[in-house]
Length: 274
Image (cartoon, rainbow, N blue to C red; front, side, top):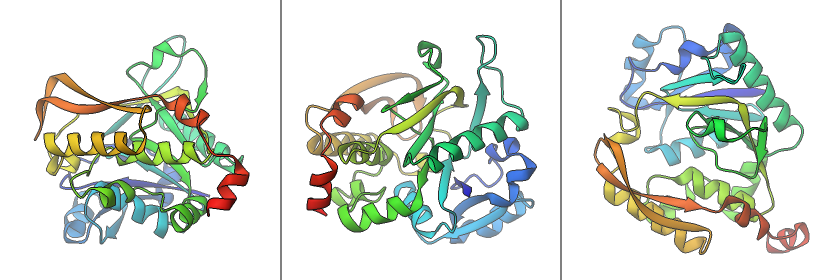
């Protein structure tokens, strides 16, 4: 069984992702917030289950979700998502029926043995003709096999917490580090392009904007690059829209995902290094 988790912070009355969740998935969907904000979220979202998380920051919150989930699989979705579906060469918004189809697809892939799966971003979706792609970037919407991820934390310290442990200033892009670590150990992902996600605007009030800064972006980019040389390359970008707390310029990463997977260790070596 797969549960859906929507991490949120300082956006009690702005959780729009729930508008697209089918009724059949409502009891398996949880909005995850800090303890001090539980009351506000319950008031603004009376039809949804609110989970109190003791951790601060999205990285540690995501790790807490993986470790505390009672379900076999955990799908994490940002709180301001809008989903689309491919139809006749276009990407109209998903109906709730379409969303049920998406959730079942991700769950089937996880049941088939893929450890991490995701959904394409709307931007760039039209550049890929295939229904799905293995070994590629995924962010904002992804699901994991919780048991495998717990085991990998014990054996290799792999998880969303890892990046911040390396550098306390590196508080963003933790999901990229997780994907790269999983590729290194030979766990390919799969991302659907028959569906896509989009956001109103990066850097909105609340959420990661509360702590994401130019320096945090830079620290995260260079810390990941240090551990994945020749695969993750820091680049400074200029956005058309100003990001709250950052401005128009920010550090990001250019990542060679397939190259990272090609350099994976074999299963025999993986057993040896546990």
